[in-house]
Image 1 (tube, rainbow, N blue to C red):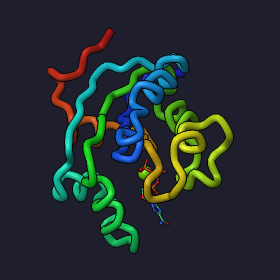
Image 2 (image 1 turned 45 degrees about the vertical axis):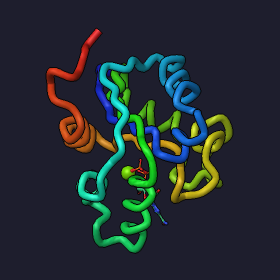
Image 3 (image 1 turned 90 degrees about the vertical axis):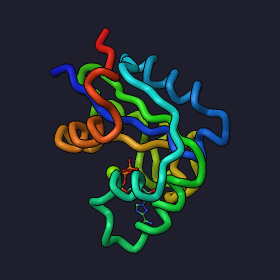
Length: 141
Ligand code: RTP
Ligand code: MG
């Protein structure tokens, strides 16, 4: 499988729980490398643009409200099959349906506050990475 990059966000609920280190440790233990990272408090405009694909969905307003409720940690993860690997580590969108041992099963309780985001396709990964990082902010290793 090819080396890929994916965008990961540690959401405000997980940051508030002091779980940044535990979550990043899971990525690293699974063989993913952090090649870019920043902490930021998203504006409504930035969060809304990030989740633009969900603009017409009934949960959009709550989603933007939640994503702007506190700081997040945004990172680019690199590794073999990074996009699917990160999604596997995250678990299902609804933590109640997430497999045991996944990040959402262990760190989240509700579908609204579900600890992490991960790109869902190569196209999303490309868009999302450039939404947060310039090329000069990514450090291949
Ligand atoms: P994410 O984009 O945050 O990684 O999550 P995902 O791919 O697993 O799920 P997605 O369908 O892209 O939805 C984005 C976020 O919107 C919230 N959501 N709420 N109430 C609902 O039915 C519902 N569906 C989605 C979740 O917080 C989800 O992470
Ligand atoms: Mg998604």
